[in-house]
Image 1 (cartoon, rainbow, N blue to C red):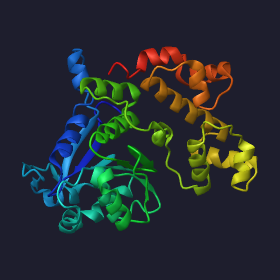
Image 2 (spheres, rainbow, N blue to C red):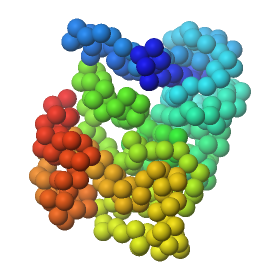
Image 3 (cartoon, rainbow, N blue to C red):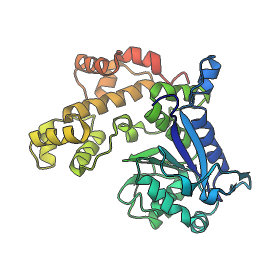
Length: 332
């Protein structure tokens, strides 16, 4: 995307929102492409245009009694790249009841090209809108029992910091918001920009289980449910020995048909997708801690170190050691 076209981020504003998360989202995304560049005396290039949208464009009364002015009316938001739903700070049931006219807008924007991401109890908005039915989600551990009672049709993974299901993202609570924000910044702007934001904001990004969003940079929207099923299996079992023939047998089709459907849906063959998922996970492991090449290869499903190193360099143009030296977040 050109410098004149930053990604559009809409932060949903509503009475009872947790003000710190609302303002934090505004700051993190607004200063992407700005803070790091100012520190290094480089040209500032904002990567996101961030606006707070409320129903009718009215002022927002946060749960801490702070009033914030909305930038725009949610009714006038036709499309965006990312819709962020912050934490509910007041009584969840009261907030959902008093702001229920926002739900059609959440559904409307989710049905466009937009990614939709909630933080903490913000997941209740997505569940109320029916967007999490049959999907993986997470929320704050303190709300897990209520969430399960209210929305049993949702696959709640309360031990995960961040979940992704197609274009829907959820973060658990508290500091998980920063994991989610960095993940989304990486999704739109790449790993280098995300790392810059982590460093300028002094964010420790070493928390949580990284496996749940291994495929974020590989995500491509498609409607082939069989391919999605195989993708899910690969992402949950990439450490194991995987073959195209065995994957095809699992879904009762021939390897040739599986190859054709993957190519059609993702422009990748299944074996290429397996390799890409493993390399993505290897990159995250290298970023998060010091690890030997043998241990790294074992953890992502390769017994042949030479083969793994060759594939890694082909994908990144760096050896694993060079990649770790350049991108390790240990120093953040």
